[in-house]
Image: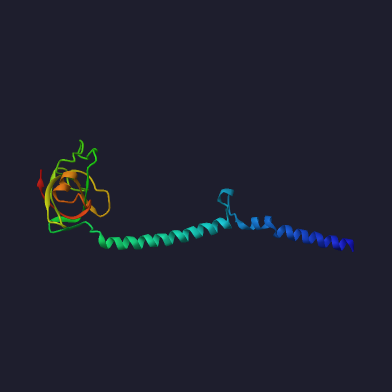
Length: 174
């Protein structure tokens, strides 16, 4: 009788050991290669949850970008000129054509126009215009087509707003 009880206790003990925390931890890992590639099932669940949150967050951002696109004028080429948003800058810095930026000069930065090109920039909000010379590259912000010097921005009345819709037409080489 003792041997039966001992055998039953031994079987019970073995079953507890196999289904206890150690067995749970061992079954939680799925390893199919070197130890560095072994990942726990918990880690996989956490990563999946984060991926789902990231996808929801991306969808939210994508939808807000779609809303913003309706309100931001994209650069377009029509009728001999460009249209889009203009900003201005005033910080002393090097310009792409060489030398230093002068905020009191009638200059501007454009992504593609050659240096020395003269352009007429018209503020579409109030109709004021200024002729500037391209001497730098930029702006590097999506939706903007030109960065004006501080003086040029003052000439067309955009210093209060900071960013305004403009039309740009090339008037020659300076």
